[in-house]
Length: 262
Image 1 (spheres, rainbow, N blue to C red):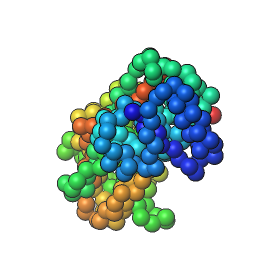
Image 2: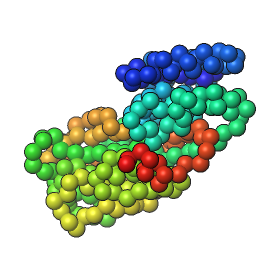
Image 3: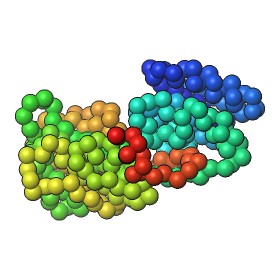
């Protein structure tokens, strides 16, 4: 059984979904349609993969449930950038043929787990961002890695990113590009007013802690998930989960950057 979800707000996504369903029916492939992550979570039968028709944001909305249920993701891009998507709409027939033949690889990507003051964790594929509540001014965030202080940063926020997320918000903030094949955590200040804390790469098994000196918020894969009070500690570490993607070719991250961001 193959699951299918779309982002109906993306132009062309509903028509592409109809094309996909017609092509899969012609091949005798069983499908199940879902309108959101909660439906995928509640679905009782196993899914061999979940096809997401949308952009990178659409794929990220299903990472949590897909990683929890160990469902591989296949993205069909109808968004602007499409770093995470594997194919375009024009490649549907090729993709379905290779799915049926088993002619693909499964790429496993590192994830992060984030908690506030030891609470229940959130899991993400791209990044965790701790940021100020107000538009004006800066906030002060103390940063530590494995209990060792990196210092106190006056900034708009701090990012902890996986190699996958290193080409997203972290890259825009001046962070390093990490190869998808490696496991590591990129720590990047956003609009820093402190020069002694620069973008840093920590080991995959490191524990990164952000301690806010004022009220703030926490965002996980672009979705705001909680408020943070002054003195709270946001803990970031490698998640026990991983996100798996169906791939028909090798990922060339530098080619993607040149093609998608220029």
